[in-house]
Length: 146
Image (tube, rainbow, N blue to C red; front, side, top):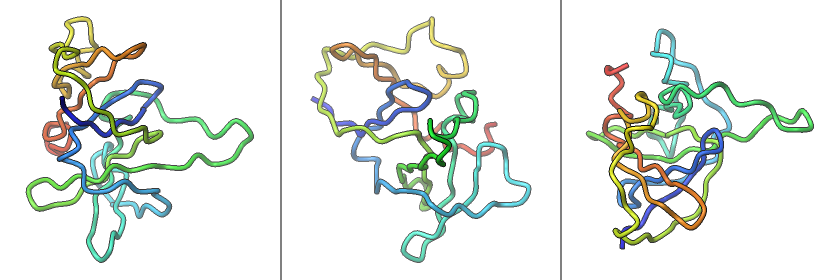
């Protein structure tokens, strides 16, 4: 069994191994960073540490998120990851559950998956009625790669 933190982006379920996740955040004030790559939405201060906010939507080529149904602003959620001594918050649409899945449900990255998505995917898990895409966090956070 493997444990994953799940979240959705553009209606698709994604997972990250739980051991890679530092924190789950409600991102309220993101300060912009001039001349940053498009996938870097800005930075936040988390308990005195600067956290770079990376948009999973931009990384995966998913369009911008619409405002809430009644015109309210949507709440930005973040999954905090530490990589190479730096903190990053993956900007996602919504946070799901922590789930344990059997390795029997695992399949490699399907050839039919969008080529951009394949670049950032470790594989997929076939759940009851959904497909969970497991993100390769190291590749996703490689700022120079895009």
